[in-house]
Image 1 (cartoon, rainbow, N blue to C red):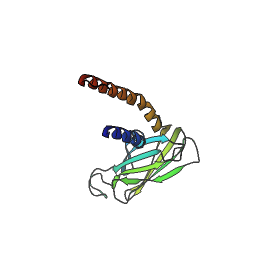
Image 2: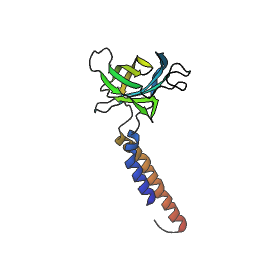
Image 3: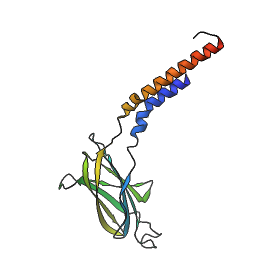
Image 4: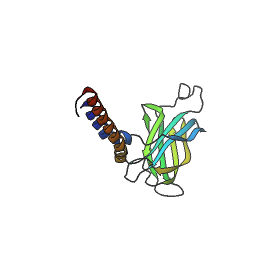
Length: 185
């Protein structure tokens, strides 16, 4: 009975767990020195048609001068540093979206922003950094695609044959055990 309950709970919770992550991020800019900053941009550019912010951007930023400077310790940036991420369809002059990045786990050197990429295709990406070390802008581009994984409900459909085979196997084991002990199933 406990096993059946655990299996049922796993199947019910599976779609929520699978929806929690939509793929690994990858770098579109790595350790580029721009002004007083050393900037890397990582992204997970999922296009969405349901209004969710699927275009996720992580900005890793350090002081370009690894020695002690206005920031204090090596490579650290001041807490007043602000990062803004803007995207727009490639080649377009309108439809630009902005988001102010927020520190990840309170670390100013790691920032996160999410924006809606409402269609597949190439998007221009701009990252603006403003702070005591100066103001800079960095541009790149990324191709947004729809998440290629099946809908969460389809995972349940895909699991059904395996659950059925497991059920048949358990029934066979019960019959075999009953036959060995001399009882009829």
